[in-house]
Image (tube, rainbow, N blue to C red; front, side, top):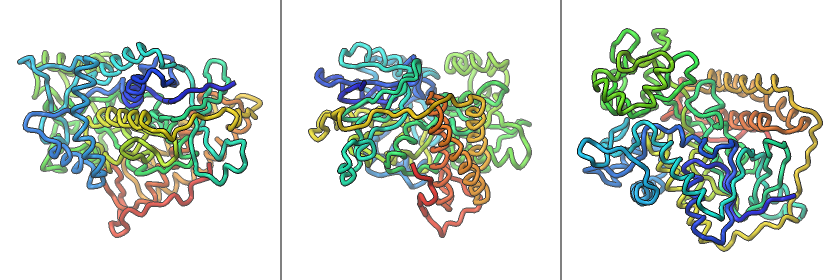
Length: 538
């Protein structure tokens, strides 16, 4: 039995939710939203603390373009950056402030507060204290639930894209281009897999931080969308550029809780464990407000050189206790639960994998290289982030490209409805269940390989070792996949291994250090030597 819809959206953070909201304005369109969790609020957006870029005083689109280009280490896509800078601040005002009434924080005069973050030349970040993503997500989901033409499939997992010619019953489809017609979806409650057909499919599945041992990402950020698109043959770009957030909480059982960029923007200082500042030695121009890759590398170098267990982030010289509690209630509460009072002592911090700057290559409308397949948000590569993302541009990118994709789909006449007779039903060949202990150990193996060999600092020997170890895991995982009954954990393992391969091969092919891709053995003469050579077949 099949599910049919006009537009299928997988994921519901700011990018997917914005696309759904705009598309639902046409009452004749049927929109289906799929989320792995029961609660559609659960997404990377929900955990975004710092804020979203708007237009500051004495600011301009050109100034924002310059800041993004500098943070991106010269690799940002000029046309995409220009689109973001031109359209983004208007969408923040029109959709988030005017339509959804997101309660952004005000300053002491009652005006919208705009703060400064690392890499920005002017204060232009609007925020809801230190829970901006949560406030935006709450308003988006509430608005979507009022739209009668939206169907929710919560607690379902996307297994693979349905594409022609691969899943077509017509052998002559082999002569045509690749096109996407929906996905196979796993009901996590019944473990039934349903063929789900759509005229347009939007991947809004977020990032891949959970392929690393230490990450600020939520549990769902395991690269599902990127892996599915790669298996289908979509073009992937800039996968080696994985940004590390320099300040995550370095306390036992804290789970690398993110300490927002806004903390440094408010004046917090980075210190060694013995209380000495160090950032001016690494970034004379920016100091503690340097772009994330610069700060993360500086911290990494200090930790390696001196054997520090972590670094310190101290807000006390900048803000009084009451102001710290007012501005950063979520951070104060989380640290207090871990036994730390940040109004009285500095915060121990360490870098962790945070954001995938690359992904499924898309154009200004969010179209991928596969007909009928769109990608928005962190799973995509618009080219905006180049080799390193500028703080607080990710929510803005999701807002802009969610809107762009929705407008493009609504205007297209070449997205014909998919007939259920053209594509195979799912063929379940699995007989027994995968051993959960083996699956979990393999997940941990992926995370350790990526952390130690394809992490913040890379070289040829480590990357070669990663290739060898991932090759073994690839074979084991494909054996599980073909012989065992599918569940969410097995789908997640398979996708993690695929994404780890993608990132590792991109990192090995690019022998020049740039932005977040730091090669200890960099040879600038090689330039950006890109190749997918050695990637196992889908």
